[in-house]
Length: 87
Image (cartoon, rainbow, N blue to C red; front, side):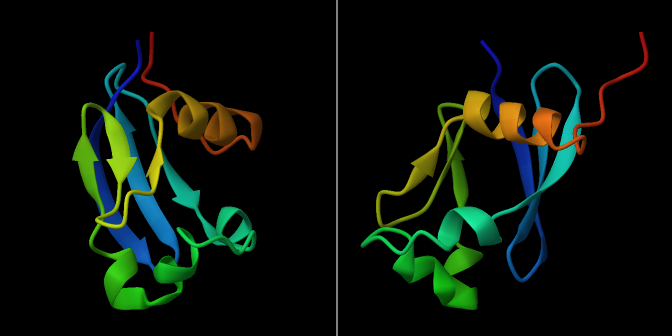
């Protein structure tokens, strides 16, 4: 099972993610956060957005919002933004 092993804040709504298979990519959360829900509204605050952490391989925020490594990996892969290690 793929896990997030490192997450580094980049810009306003972007986080660089490194996965357990050595691949990485910069995830832009603006599209996901355009769906205004009680959990995503808090992330509009730039300071709160930067309070993310990794728990059990998932990307999480203190308000309970979390994204699985698998879903973020798939989004990066489908958008052509996932960089895989050389074979």
